[in-house]
Amino acid sequence: MPPRSSRPADKFDDDDYPAYTMGRAAEMLGATPAFLRALGEHRLITPLRSEGGHRRYSRYQLRIAARARELVDSGTPIEAACRIVILEDQLEEAQRINEELRTRGATS
Image (tube, rainbow, N blue to C red; front, side):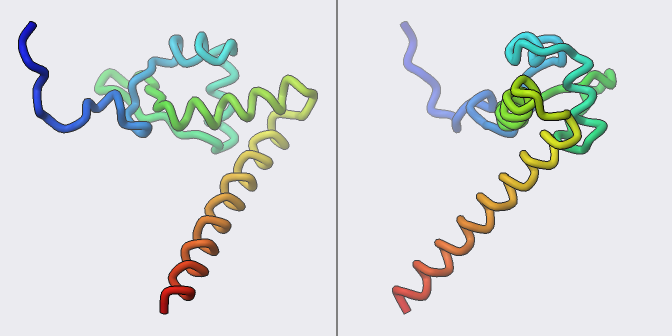
């Protein structure tokens, strides 16, 4: 077997690389393409488009969609589920920044 390439990590290792078609993404989530379109309409995720105009989703977007799906499956309306996921993401980012600032302040 030839030695592995020493090139940088494959683009499929990138969480933001739009590797999944709408059909594959829906299948992975156990959802319908209409569910994914609804998440886009509510501005939770914005899929990239292929040159042919087809929606493509990243692993990061699929994790967000999976969280929304959990909420919808438990009875939360899709609009509210999208807002909850957005707020959870904002809270996580604020906590990360707060911890970074706290750590930076402790070393000063």
